[in-house]
Structures are given as structure tokens and as C-alpha cells.
Length: 326
Image 1 (cartoon, rainbow, N blue to C red):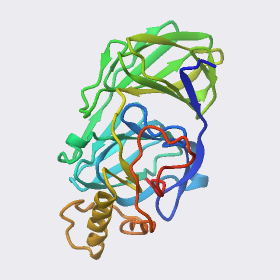
Image 2 (cartoon, rainbow, N blue to C red):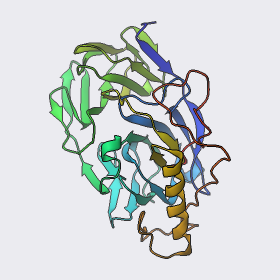
Image 3 (tube, rainbow, N blue to C red):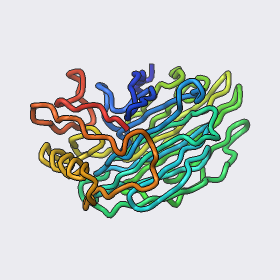
């Protein structure tokens, strides 16, 4: 194996609400917390909605992070406390910056028969963690980047293509499709960590085999370079990368903060809106018609939640963080 490359095997996790769907999660993991500012990588489907019931995540809060939604098939209805009502469709990115606080719901539409995609989170650096919340949508063009290789860049710049969606730290995110027997040199910006999440098929990244739903991470390089991505059978992958975060965070449920006290305050603010009164921090989502009006926050463990940086090789999550639900 390439000594500068780490392969993270996914684990199955139920995703929020009374009708939980199972996702395959590679970040955060005991081996690694972040790739750049990417801190949360869920891969799900393809799921037969007729058998599974699809996605139905009631209103829930976020702060200190941004969510990036990317679908391969199906359609998801997004509503948030800014009044946004938008669809997540294949090949179109929805980026929601939570900042100081936002709430939203996600429901697969009646037209969806097969649901298949990725849900990604970004840590907002401490200096901008409390920015005003915002929502952005972009349909990136398909670009040819080699014989039998095409890409869509939904965050940052890669292969000469750029996304206009605003992020708060140097990042890149792209879907890359390889036909059987094809290969492409993926440029790695100077100092970036780069990862590849395999959606379908299998690939070799700098000579290391990576299977479906696994995340392969290339450590930060001291100078710009390339990694070779190839597939004998054909594959579809997400390329996710960024400058190392260089910060420690407390990540618990749907909140990211810098201390135990920040997370406790966020939980209390969300629970204060349970009575139906206006929530000054997270707002309210209108138009959601599910079985429950909102997802209540779980009880914080009876220990002090600790910060964690990019690794905790002692095993398990640092502190006693509950895994995020949505």
C-alpha cells in the first residue's frame, strides 16, 4: 500500500427520525476525523423506496457547519428555516451553510423510485462559525477530463472547472465517472489532503485498490502534484479534498462547536423551541408534513464533551460524542 494513503472502511449507521434509513459512514472514523474541512461522509443506496420507505427526516437543527447534498438518483425535497423550498436532484449540488444556526427537513419525493446519494458536512473554521445561514444551489457542467473520464465539480476548482458556491475554507468536491479501462491524473492543490469515495465499481488510487463505499485518503503534500485514479471495470467516485483544518472541534449530534458549553447551549436553544414558539436561533421549518413535527435532541452524555482534532488513534471517537443523526 502507498504509505501516504489511508483506506477507511464504512460502518452502517441509522439516519435520523422515526423512519430511519441506513447509511454507510466513513467520516468521522476512529482513524480520522477530517479531510480538509470535510468532516462527515455518508453514502446511501441505491435503495428501492417502495421497500424502504425512502428518506423522511423531520425538521432538525445545525450550527457551526455546512451541509452538501449530492444525489446519483432520486429526488429529495428540502425545506429550511430561511424559507427555502428546493429540490435535490442528481448532478445538482445543494449547499446549506448553517453558521450560527438553521433547521431543515429532507424528504424523498413521491416520484422517487430509487434513492442513491451522499450527504456531506463541512466544518466552518472558528473565525466564521457564526456566519449568517444561507442556502445555495448549483448544477455543475459535465466536463471531459480524459479518454473515458468525465467530471462535475460542485465545490471549489478541479480539472479547469469551478463551482460558484461559497465555502469558508479551501476545498474541492467533484463527481468523477470512469469508463472501464480508463484512468485520469487528479491534480492535488498544494498542501491539500485529498480523498476518493467510491460509489460504484472499484478503483485504484496511486496503485492502492479501493472498493465500493470505502474512502481512500491521500495525506497533505508539501507541493502540488497528482494522484492516478484508474478503474478496470468502470466506476463512479466523489473526490473530496481541502487544506488541513488545523483546528479542534466538539462534534455532537447535529452541532459543531469549540467547547462542551457551546454544544450544550445549542441543544438548549433547539429544545426551547419544542413548545412551538418561534426559535430565535434555529428558526422554524414550514411546510413539512411528516409524522412528527421535529426531531428532539438526544440527552447529552453525563461527561464533558472533549475537542478532537484530525485523529484519535486510541480508538473510538474522542470524548463521548453521540453519532450525528442527520
